[in-house]
Image 1 (cartoon, rainbow, N blue to C red):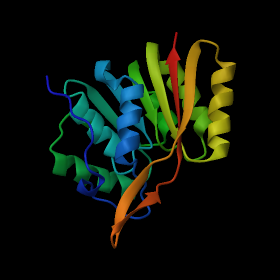
Image 2: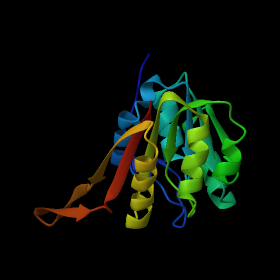
Image 3: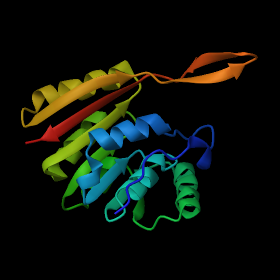
Length: 193
């Protein structure tokens, strides 16, 4: 079975107001979450669907569920799914905590957006995550990072690691190659006992 990671960001349809997880962060997130051995993956706050599509290509025998509450984002996500010809992604237009109630179990939860409800989402994920399952949270604000870390500290049935990732791309400016920094991202990976 062929596994693939690293779709170019330019290949995704985008709109300015709809967030998209960038290529290097997608690669790290899916690798650290050990998505390669997951049967069911939920992508919470799916935005443009970049994580869902990358996961679908990486785990072609898996079932990926893209949960997104923003209807404009859902429209872009569906167009991206069509453009990439993936058929193992199901789109759910709903608040995350509500959508998660309808699952029996899953192996990996990737949290990209929380709409200010991170703790509620983590609680809902915890109820349905299989033993040995992983949570991967990509966080851009200090407040969400703090909420996430405190949640894991209160849940002793998880082992977690956290990191901040800073990606720089080099662009040619005349005869020079100059770094252009992307926003730093905090990644928290938790594994359930």
